Image (cartoon, rainbow, N blue to C red; front, side, top):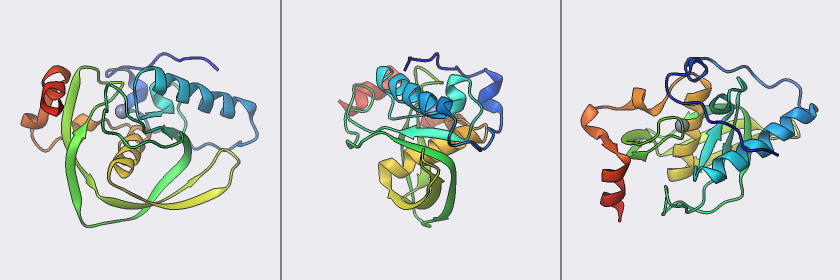
Length: 173
Ligand code: ZN
């Protein structure tokens, strides 16, 4: 396991379509998952995608827990999400704060589906189906965007929804 360098806005991999994972028995896959979890944890992230560590795979981690960047995040065991798809979603959307380890210093209020039904593969190559809501659904939608070459800035409805990290922190205190 090793902490990896996080790519920053402007790096071309953050604007690329990531490639599906095909070989679930490759030991490098588990090593990459472990390194992603370590990297996200060290950076106070609640999720991280493979393109953010320069690996063009359809793979991300959801690792929500309270930390200095997200003091109110729910606690869960880190989960690897491979070759994900949203197969259904609520009509209802929720507008709430997001940040990104690849876009340091900024926060935006972004609309996301409140509930999503998702399909993905776990690290053993087994297909999973789940219904996610609220903050966890938000992380899933944010990370899935990374696999399609999008960052949260593209989802802003107004530039007025963009804040600096400092202003955001003073709001949530
Ligand atoms: Zn991000």
